[in-house]
Image (cartoon, rainbow, N blue to C red; front, side):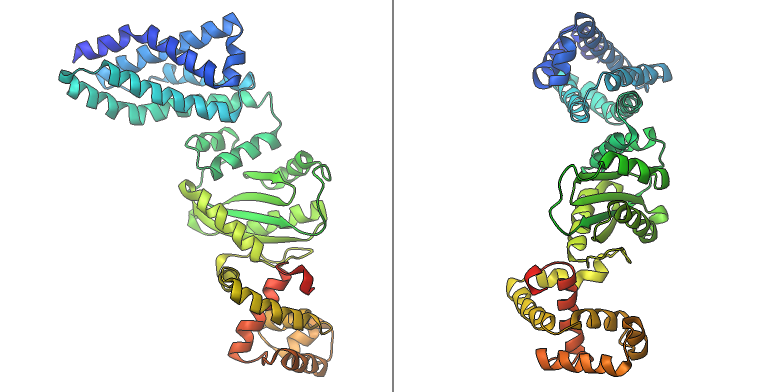
Length: 392
């Protein structure tokens, strides 16, 4: 067994040289860094040290020491301060893991099965610990280079992509790491948006003073907040608060959709929250942060073109009558209570009755019947979500 580990340590220089060549050939950030002789030497020395220490500890089945992890964090911090991008940071971690496994495989002889399995068992947990330390340093190094808004957006992107190092980025920015997040997607509606219409970093900086959580505004039409769902409880109240503050900052109508998911399943959660936002009503001031339970009928109808077109026709007929869409929206929002609905609409109850009768005449559906509620409420919801601009 000792011969296997001795061979790995003897090959450390050659393998480190190959690793640096791989980094510089595949990553522009590392190619630029390596152009400086001093930096190139630093890359090589760290690669050698990491290999020697890894296989020394693996042979004895011992963890990295605090000094080892502090050195890795210091090297990560240096990379962050030099402007290495998050994409390059993630890629170099993947390359290092791949190359290490390759080096172990190349050194193994038929009689080294026990040593090989022991090394692979050691690399899993201890390799993760090393990457975490390196990432913590990297995040700290970015602090001098990037403003808070930019670093928070990188964090949100990493979480939504389920990057393994994302949790280290969370703690590096002074945030707690929850088991679940309520992903909140705010869809900005109205006229076409110019990319330069708002100083996005400034808006995010303002929001972060009140809502310290991962935020992202990748395109002008979509804002995303990852609200910690403590104890697994969906954080729709906090989601609505950040959505309202965002809408107030930009002064544009928005729709808000949310979905709650585990930290390791946020990509699918994000996709669902986006679908919910697209099916949610557009409001000047968001009044609710919708969930799947609020819009599952509309989402189902949208997936069947024939059903959606039929609802589209119902919506066109409703839109032809004055105030019928608003009336139905308020009427159903008040659980069909005539007095509450008429008060909310600022009309006499008889006026409300007349409008409901007009709906029946135009669509052939009784707004108070089971079928009428299902069809008309869905058509109104799709209409208010902006599904059919022509119908309005």
